[in-house]
Image 1 (tube, rainbow, N blue to C red):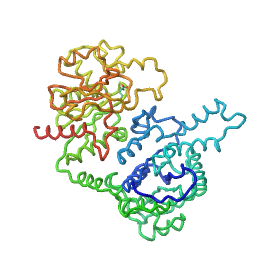
Image 2 (cartoon, helix red, strand yellow):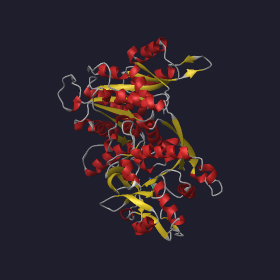
Image 3 (spheres, protein in one colour):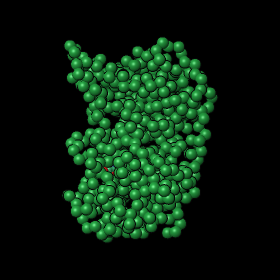
Image 4 (cartoon, rainbow, N blue to C red):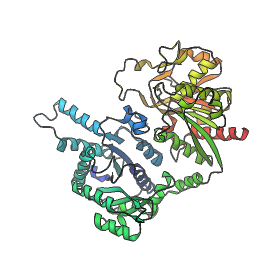
Length: 550
Ligand code: GLN
């Protein structure tokens, strides 16, 4: 860890520096990637950094949202259901996030209302300012107070000017006022659109967005400007002048080939150094980012390609499978191979077209999901993978479908199903977990977070992980029904991973198949650039081998 000359300050908490990232002009500019890239650069300079996301919507967490609405729900080790940006934070930084890294308006109001009911504000009118903003601030500081971090980067979801985000913006203003500008830096991410007819980049939307921030009492220190074209000096000067920022604090963020290029682009634009300047922190000239660059070289120079079919029912919104996509990118880089995902809507798979749809693929992944829609297509896809020795990877619902397929077509258990999809099936090979039976409330009540699992010696899973005990993250209510375990085993589908406390089956694999692994947990939530997930790496490897024999 680098020796830093901190400006002297009285309280311990303010030793931690706070960086806020707000967005303007439009949503979807990639605040999460900018935050993660800055964090990566600071981390590469030897600082400890974490990133937290504050979302202005009223749901307590995104756990109850349809994936079409919000993309994937990312799950942390400690069982928080969170925004998918936390996945980017972990993939870039290679450190776990937690419950405290994602806070919504719903969570803030819930806390305040509970305090009000407990009598904490007796005699007082409870108001947005100061009570809601105080609650937001105490959540801003929570991770800082652990003393573990030099920098806390806080991403504020949505756009400046949204009604919903006003209390968060006000809390940022107060934080800046209370801790002082030595301890708080504000970065505003905007868009510089290019008008084809005029042949020009336009700064006006950014000027307006900054004005909006200024009205809320926040002068951004740094502007990060998304643009399709380079910002020339004149544009930079104009932005600096109208937005009150120094010209070298106008940072260009060009559209990148991959999200993993962004830290390097930000390094070139000196975003990390500008932030450190603002805090009066001196650092070595170059961050240690060699392994990241190495990864980029591999990523961009694949020597082969594999086609993996991703069978799911939310495929129209790719963000619903964000972590799976990124895990394939990491694994592909390890194998110098480009993984081309072939998106297959499970509802489109019918008995008469499945062979044609799937048999050319080098591997098939059946994705997580909920409910009955598209289940038959998933089961048909698994049958093809099993019978045609195509490498198969099932995740969560994908594992449950693999169990149902095997029960129906190999064990000949007519009426085998999951109790989630069939009405009291004759053979409930996948059943609701005992502790889930009496749960009525939907929010935050699944089996969530990291649990350990023991791997069967000499199993494929054991070989892939090269260890006996693993820990993986979960999000489900249904499980393999152990009453059927011996019948599966006898017929060649074994439980190669089991939770030793509960006996819950975590991994099923096929014996007489080149590569067939199905997991109850979500390995995609733990793949990072530095630590690609072994199951994804091995699956890509199996797909490469299968391709050679095809
Ligand atoms: N719907 C299944 C369950 O609740 C699988 C969940 C998932 O795929 N995340 O058990």
